[in-house]
Image (cartoon, rainbow, N blue to C red):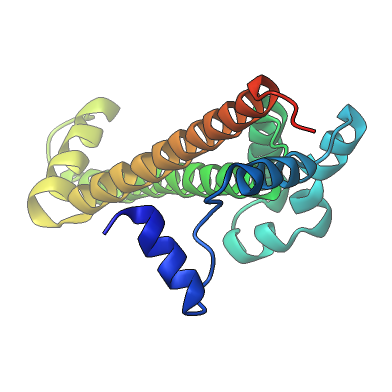
Length: 195
């Protein structure tokens, strides 16, 4: 059964629409989509870009007590300023990117603190040894201990890769969404006026 017949049969049985089947339906859908593209003016886009910061809901749910909500807002603002989301869907992609970046930055801080703690442990263990030990040697010993004696470094690397992928997927999704929207806008402009 062809997809058009299957869709028409579904509609006859009360199923939700799966998109326009007729030329008139397609034109109507394109006309409706042109009306819902988000803020049209630069002032509107600027206002929209500040929504997450103004409400602070996103920062409250992701930023730990030991972290800076202002710094998270800065990460989000930077992405919003650079990518200029024009719709709520685009804003969600940008927010996902900010979340992934914030979590990645958190992991970097955790790794730094773990190395510092392990370096102090190595230094304390080395006090009975001879002479002063170079800081880089303590760091190397700390790294080795973290890698050999625990899964800390492995887990940090795994989570960092996860957040890098999450960021990249959101960025690719944003680009694909914008490309689809632009394609629809171009198709609308290139279709002949009927009527």
